[in-house]
Length: 254
Image (cartoon, rainbow, N blue to C red; front, side, top):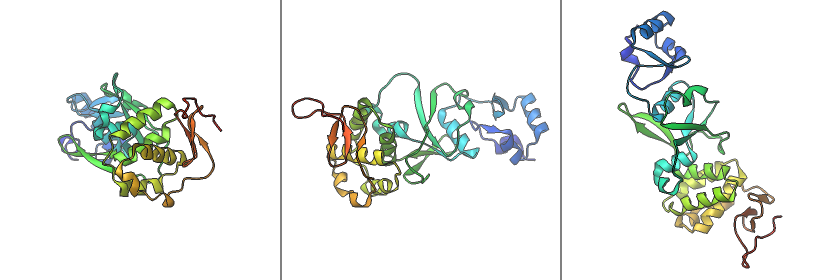
């Protein structure tokens, strides 16, 4: 059996199944717990004693425990440099997309951030538009949505005038999105509302990359979609969006 220090890196959270897979049976785990070389941070979850955990420790540890997950939505946009467009205050939220339910202990093992499990991804493909970002002493790969994927994750959940307004504000600073990646993501995205809303916002912002998107290859569905109540109807994308008509009155909702 290898020594614990040889297989368990500082900052990594593991469970008994992981320890058993690496050669540590129940008596060995109990010995390391009694000797102080291992500590329980939640029921059935362990680490080597060390500095306070960062949220990236938790995310990477989950990937080591078999979860396919990534940091996405507003959290990914903040990482990619759009944080000055986001609302500040309170503990930072880390929005995670995962292929299965996240364990309840993740918000109990560190107190600098709050993890938010996103309910449904607008993509079936778990890897398209995902980037590995090195973290920590051992350059652990933490998966993040690219800005292009994160924007579509954002529009998939935006449902109020306030949320759409924030998304528009963030998109104002996104002049360097990659049209080739956007094209692939828009073609793979399974949520019609997310695609229509993103394209509407992109058209309104007028960034140069918008002209390179081939909408003929994107399934935008059929029929009208009401995104906000009491909004203005956009003929091109058949959605209601926040806004006023030329007289300053709210357009009727279909």
